[in-house]
Length: 212
Length: 383
Image (cartoon, rainbow over all chains, first blue to last red; front, side, top):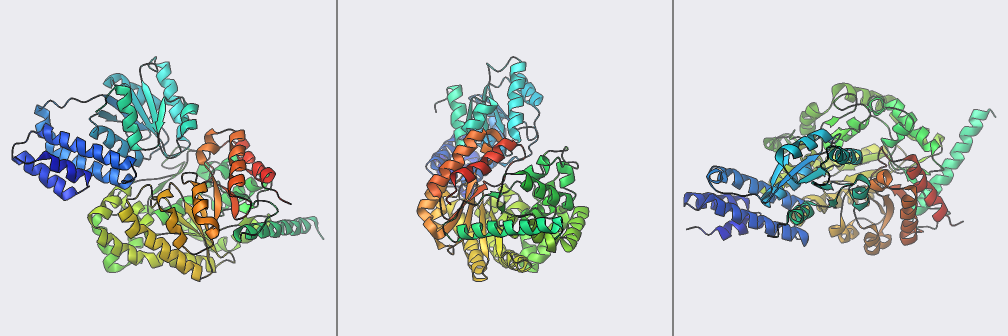
């Protein structure tokens, strides 16, 4: 039986060809898709650790996310019959007036690889769409991204829309993006902010009480 | 002498004084006052009531609004890089990406934005390798440029471009850099889209390197030929997605650093001052900047630790500091003032020019912009 620890290592080392080969080999040998997924999630945790100690940088996060995505696609048929239980739900998007998606996509990938279900609303998302998605999904976390300083107003407007819908108390709000900092977080009224994708994962897990 | 001529001569005298101040800062000589530069491409027209949709399609209105915005501020010495020509055409040329503009693809008075898409396919590397960089530019240019704006821009550059420097001088303002360029890494990153290009750097680094090698001389020569058309021998050299925080060290060492090093060395040999407009965080690799020719100007945006950079680089580079766009947009005048005050205390008084980090965002309150200038005057005057 193939050793899924090798998949974890290959993913953590960003060896795309090897990671994909091992994942296929494991599936063919009858390893449950869920076990392979867990190995990949452990590999992504290792990527996150290397990012935090500045061994890895943003391009490495992107590459690991790409490998994770490709393996997840291979595993999808097997996962539908398995019992992949997500740790929580997050609604995420780039706010109204901003069409930048690179930072958002990195965070969404990292959140998904941390076993969270992410409802990705895309870019230029109006406040009412965020509110609607939160209502429909039952998600308890909202993540907003923006690269422009003009995004600050949209973030504030979205948080005001949450309050107007009577949901502010139930939803934790995180923001991020190039110009976002602690002062911006305070000014727009978010609960917290992240300078990078790893901080977003940490925040979400803390709010959900997930410690793995 | 008629009053208009007298005013013009006075303005030229003011320009000479400001120019001398900036030259001293660039040479690490004592200054009477820390020079302060303006850079707010979208803020300027908005502050003068010019809608961004108009600014994006009328180069002449853009220049006038920028000059008026300079006049409206309390005694700035000049501009980092002059507004001249259409912003979307300039950005498209450097990023090799479509730029969406207000009034067309975007609502009125929103900011122009680069459209992130895979314009260049992976097989298009072969165009560069087999036909050369200029053939590649023609191929991509046809996909990303808006023909009407490109034509309008070229016409403006032909008729008005040569007189641009003089117009700024006659209003009393110095220009730090007259040209802009970047390394081919940035251009391909725009053309391929950031994620796809980064994946290319992992999957086929040698092929990417071969393409960059072909593009390198184009971007170096762009600055050499551009600066030869004015008496301002200085160019903006951009870096945004090549920043250390974004790129793995093994990619940076192979596909980023050698190209900056080669370009800066050649431009230095041609007597061209390089203003490194380096957005994002470059902390990891600041020590390697010591390998660049002495005397370059480092323009940071608040994301790189400027004090640590100064400790490491000393007088190897001149610093443009670095008031963050988020502080301009979401801070208070007091907070901006304090930021400038502390920067002057820690980095001044020589080899420092005060400058917005990247540029002043369009939603910066005027009071914050005025605080930036006033703080420089009040905290950075020595004579």
